[in-house]
Image (cartoon, rainbow, N blue to C red; front, side, top):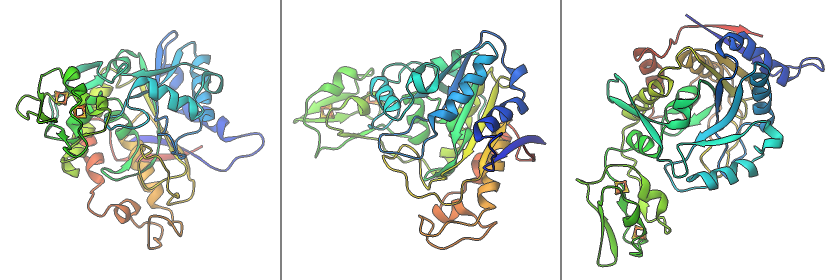
Length: 367
Ligand code: SF4
Ligand code: SF4
């Protein structure tokens, strides 16, 4: 049985939500988890351009300040995306993060885009998964001494919900690691948008691409699945084949979480913010209306327990009218299934238990 702490939204002039974040961190035992001088990666999602549901920089500042009072060196971090968007290379990613309010003056610590300029710098971590035997994790996250995983808790179109496990598994992977989780085949060129410019050829490490009759062609048998060509094509002509089944996708994601935590099993803390619980990922350039009221913040040293408790808290609420959930749902009804009927979101929790990442059994302590 793991302990999950919950800070509700109720506050007083003497105890703000920021004070509650400090209390949550203390209750998880951060004072003994972090040792003086450590490099502490605070893993979050900076939000795509146009998204408005990502976490407020002020929350991250509070976490960074708490880490600094313990004599450690915090930095905010995320990895580049697989798809082409406003965070697909480190330069655009930093621009987006700063535009979204995560400048040094606001958050009080540096920003480091993990996985390098183009999302290629990873470490192959051996894992004993049911599906995978290695996870390719961004180097800066591997090299950090400890990890604080800060997640905007929300629904997700591929995993039912997205919380600590997803932030770890998908969020800490390099571009190649993300492609492994999403797809079993090489990317595909769209002949209607390809201009035959040959840019992708220069970046392909496997020489898997050739241009035939002014259109690029990828050899499936040679492609290494690094995902590089997707990001470099100036015409967005190379498409990811999102062919992995939702069940296997979740299992792979959890096994990547295992890789991201390797060596930091006792050096990590997880915070889920159950605020503006939106119906889809923060990777979209918009945020649709929240599906339930703001609930609060959960914290634990167990990523499975913190996600299980967060799921139960969301499902314990009535749905809000006029959202992506068409029919009003009562307390106790499954909000994730209402949004994504084909996704069994319990798979990520069950597989997390099976892989030894934590337990679905928890005690909820309200602070
Ligand atoms: S970079 Fe894009 S447009 Fe240029 S050849 Fe490759 S796929 Fe075609
Ligand atoms: S995914 Fe990587 S190896 Fe495969 S074609 Fe694209 S650049 Fe080449």
